[in-house]
Length: 345
Image (cartoon, helix red, strand yellow):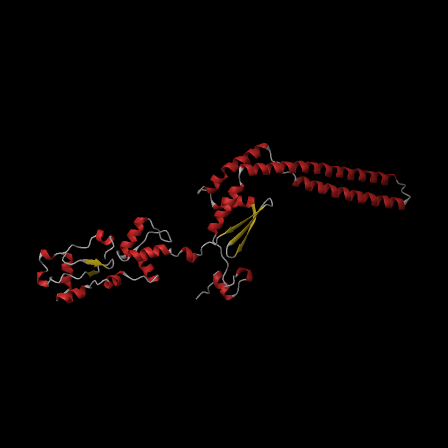
C-alpha cells in the first residue's frame, strides 16, 4: 500500500513545518472565492479616472522635482570634472625632480578622478530611475483604461492569468490573518495600503451541507410525497442541491438517513393505515386479491415509496370479500389534489 502523501496527512504525522499547521495539527486553508471578489472590488474602486488623474498629476510634480535634482547632480559632476582637470594640470606642471611634491599632486589627482567617477556613476543611476515620463498619448490611454477596467475585469471571457498579470502590476502583496474573521492587508505597488475584514469563508463541509430550511421542507413533504415525488417538487420550485445538480430520489433518501427523518411508511402506519398483509388477514383473502381491489378502486391506497408498495386505509366494515367485485362498494381513489391538501398520500 502506498503511503498517504497528502498535506493533511503529513501535518497529522508532524512532518510539516510549524507555520503550515494550525492549532489542531491541520494545514491552515482559506477558500479564495470571497477573497478574490473582495480584492477585485478594491481594484475596481482604485482604478477610476479621477484616481489615475491624481496619480499622473503627482507623477508630473515628482518629475519636476527629479529634473531639479538632475540639474544639481549634473552640476556636481561638472565640478568634480573641473577639480580633476585642475589636479591634472597641477601634476603636469610640477618639476619631475621634485618627487615629494609630484607624489602629493599625483595622489590628489587620483583622488579627484575617483570622486569624478563616483559622481558620474551616481548621476547615471539616478537618470535611469527618473526616466519614466508619461507622455500625453500614454496619459490618454491610461484614462481610457480606467473607464473600461470594470467591464474588462468582470468580463467572463477575461482569463484568470490575465487578471493575475494586472494584479502583479497594481499590488505588491496581500497578507491574510485568520481569526474570528479574515483580516486582509493589501499593499499596492506605490506604497499605499488598504485593510479589509471579511467573514470567514465556508469550509468544504459547510459548502456541501444542505441548508436547514431545505431539510425542514423535505421533512414536511414526506407526509405527502414519496422520495421521487419530493425530488420532482423541489426541482419544479427551482431549489438546487449543494452541488447545483437536480434532485433525485436517491439524494432525498440519503438526506433522510443522514438527518434521521422518519420515513413515509412509518408515518402512514402511525396514522392507522394497514399493510396489504393486514388487509388480506382482515377479510380472509390472499394478497393478490388486495392488489386487485386496489387496481379496481375498491380500496384507497397510498404509495409509501417509488417501487410500487402501498399502505391502505381501513376499508368500510360492510365490505366482505364476496361483495368486493360489485361497483357500489368502490371508493374514490386518492388524488394528487387530496394529497397536496395535506392528507395522507
